[in-house]
Image 1 (cartoon, rainbow, N blue to C red):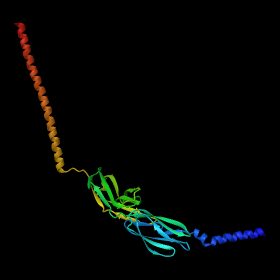
Image 2 (image 1 turned 90 degrees about the horizontal axis):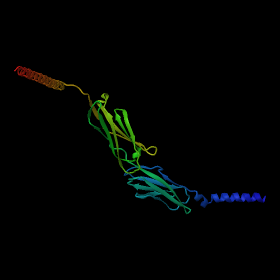
Image 3 (image 1 turned 90 degrees about the vertical axis):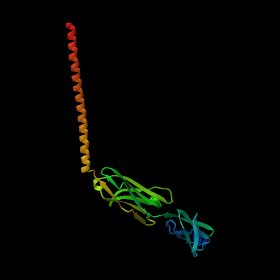
Image 4 (image 1 turned 120 degrees about the horizontal axis):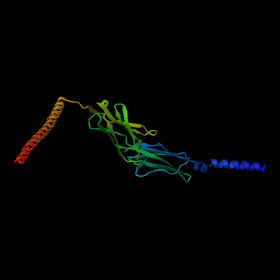
Length: 275
């Protein structure tokens, strides 16, 4: 019986301890909203810090290189305004409850959507089989690892590129592709498409360049070129024939001259023998 009474007393004491203000306050939590803030570069952000502590003490926010002002507050919450955000930053919200301090943090992601997309095509016209270069440029975009650039020929995808970077500053994105001209590419429209995907915590941003048209030429013979080639061939033939005739005449002249000297030498030898 005594053992039963002792067990009952221990259980009641434990339940009383759990229901006491001090024990309850030790289990309090701190939360922040939004939980995954994504902010455009240069814009502002409102952060709400709250706690489920019954009688919270001091509370506030901690961050670096960001101007913070408190806008509103209640018993269990505080609203803060962060202005002119320009880089990724960590924000800590804290509350003190029964001399116990707890923190909650969020990472603010700064982005700049692709507003200007330019495409250059060099050269503007080529001959079938020659190469031309497509260059896409997107200035001042962040975060670069969330950006995808796609080169298009009409509606057909030619090439897609993603990026890897550890920098959180504004950067320029470049994509260059060398292409061999085909006959069917003539008069084609080429363009560059940029996509900044911030899901699931934000949305997608799209931008496209103005289309560029490529003109492809095929080698063809015109009358003037044909006449020039024929004249060149005739002149070469005349030159070759002239060389051959000169060579033949020289050989003939040499043979005639050698034959005359031989007859004269034989006559002289015959005369000396009979004298």
